Image: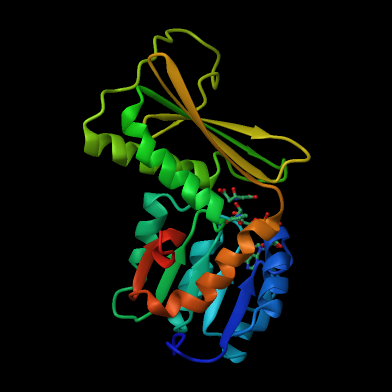
Length: 255
Ligand SMILES: NC(=O)C1=CN([C@@H]2O[C@H](COP(=O)(O)OP(=O)(O)OC[C@H]3O[C@@H](n4cnc5c(N)ncnc54)[C@H](O)[C@@H]3O)[C@@H](O)[C@H]2O)C=CC1
Ligand SMILES: O=C(O)C1=N[C@H](C(=O)O)C[C@H](O)C1
């Protein structure tokens, strides 16, 4: 049974419970009225504990390489899934979609659960058609295993989509020679630069430029607490989404 609408308490299992995000999520779920933390699962634990505990929603903050396996397990057992783990490019989303026909399970993948980051992505996509050039700089703690960040990748996708819809011209760039990586990685034609620095948590700047002016949109997560209201909202509201895959927390926000 997936999480029922209007049910008083939603039973939540956390995958990646011993990790940086997993620990914070377990605390947030414990503190949230209406949510009941019924299973904490990390790498060496048997995921069947989530089923035995009657979990209705699983939250996944693990590693890009294992998430699809966890989602597959949850789908097989009729558990809705809130995914925070990064690395959900189009190919991976397709893998997840392929698991879902014939089930009523909902999978919500949110590249970023902080409200500021969701707004930053929106504002960047809204502004992008009005500027000749756009580049993204994402900055994270040095323990992060993937680059560029999921947030930067999603931002680049949204920017590219907005520019394509507006018929924007290709971005100017006269670079003919350079060291490998000097212009960053290219995601959907948008250059993305990744910084890893002790002391940081999660930060992103979208730099937009056109003749005679620039606009910089910056977001900073100064604490992992910034992600928790979004995760709690997702656990409570995932049952209101249609069955299938939803990408982005926007689906649950009245923006
Ligand atoms: N969407 C968002 O708002 C945010 C997403 N993230 C993403 O969340 C993911 C986790 O980040 P951190 O917590 O910093 O990493 P972490 O490395 O601290 O934690 C990952 C945890 O998952 C566990 N794990 C590995 N395989 C597992 C499996 N098969 N089943 C259950 N647990 C397993 C690991 O043992 C570890 O405890 C990353 O992909 C990161 O980019 C991080 C912050 C916010
Ligand atoms: O690993 C992190 O820390 C974060 N990962 C997510 C990403 O890859 O975008 C979200 C946030 O940036 C923190």
